[in-house]
Length: 188
Image (cartoon, rainbow, N blue to C red):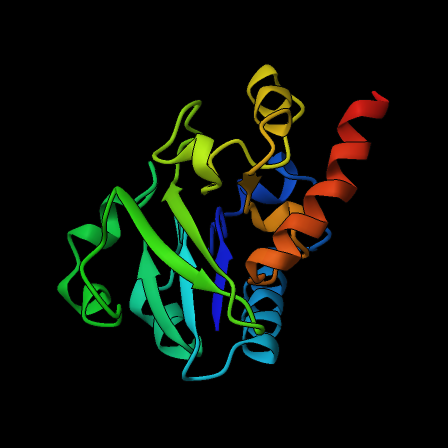
């Protein structure tokens, strides 16, 4: 199965306040997110990290990666430079990191959907008008003009950890989560 998540920001103290995360400190955040991930993902699953895996972390990126189940794929975000310069962390990934990637996501009943992934929201992505989905991150759970614009795009989905229960989610789950946070942003 394929799972998606962005903006984990493992080890990043300031993101707790920035995202209004429900954690007392970095250790609680890190260990909770590791447990949520491993409670959901199996070793044979593919997890697409849509950027910003860790930031200003005291622990090495590979420390986190080795604890997380599944085959991990990194779509490069603006806070992933340190990982890109770390051969031990890169060795924990299923393939070399990419800035933009497309995959076919297959549902349990065999339906196939094209998914275009980029850390940054894209206004017009490949095959947008032919049913392709775009999964992105970067804008977290912020109520911004970009967030509202992307919410209006039918198959554009924000995979930010703070919007998706800090847990990797399937495409179908991301679609359902979008309905929930879409209501939140439109109530303001």
